[in-house]
Length: 500
Image (tube, rainbow, N blue to C red; front, side, top):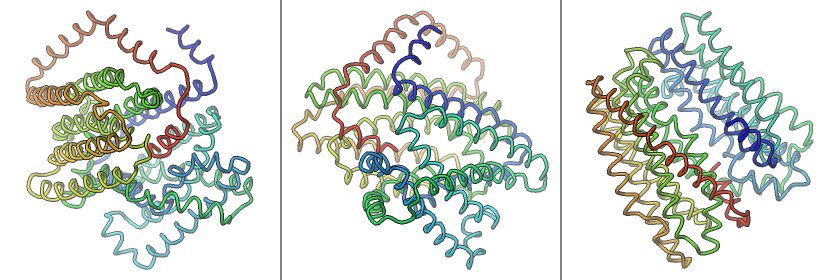
């Protein structure tokens, strides 16, 4: 095992960087879950709700104060303006400064109105403005570091920020006992602002360009058409928590957030698998050889299904470990949201083809439609059935999202002369149905702990018996991804931009 790890890290800078980013992501995810029990046990659900509302509102507003410039257009800009990357970053940072200035100009005169609407006090709304600016400057710096494979400073900054942010939050929560929820948010955001401000000043000092007409025109014209897509995706992921907080209280929002975080804990696994799958798939499409895509996509879907079933099985114990018995009602949210993650993978399979042929309009339409349906279902569902129903509305909305992108992909394939059956949909649908039936069946066993433990034990024994076969399947899967690197540059570039 250690020999294989050593051989992996001794390869190219690209492999080292990818490995470092993955390890860093896993460590940060682990830290978030390790500290979760501390906050859920020493703070009330209502106090925890402040963090849930703040973290749900921030990614929505930051789209307007940054235009998502660290993502969409950034990768192509690093190529297009490779002789003046620092100048480009310095210039687009100024755009974000102006947009945050507009945020404050709209907020400060009407603070009471916006505070009531958001359900947050002035201190957090003002802090959010600064965090939107400085976290964006941090993302610009990290984007450049990723692009140039400077993984060491990237990993150092992300780990330092996470450790200091966690430490500051814990200290403030223990000191400011009368407003622990606000104190927790301030701890994380304060560290983010300090680090981001240093990186912002550094980027301006290096770039020495506060305004460049060419850079501004390129960045704004590229990203503004993508705002509906970015916004719909954020609303898709965050609207349920905001609506729960507004309609049934911050305590319910905190419970839902714990369950949602558990169900989506495997997102980084999904991203890692997809990031390996996409270049390989693009090579196959370029060579008009799509037969193996059937097999590989099914293997990945099968791996995700097994892992997600494991999450569903241990959901009650995990919630008890990560929080306290008051949060147990949230366990009923985990199965439908976990199933949504498999649907998200299916959607990504279809979107990969859309990205290859640079067909973004259909993706935007599917995203907006699914987000609107999710909001409508959430409103009536939460109103009549409580916060738990938000997990099921999420599941239904992801079904719609996957179906829309499937038909969009088929249309693109017909237009481009590619085999419409690039994936084996009969097998994928059958797997989803089996996974859903088993998942809901496991949920029915939540009150019967002994039976559920017996199921877990049998599953572990079966996995141990067939461990060699499972390891071979996974090894063959990743071995296939390491074929010669004759990838089509433009499709991969577009995938990177839109995935970001």
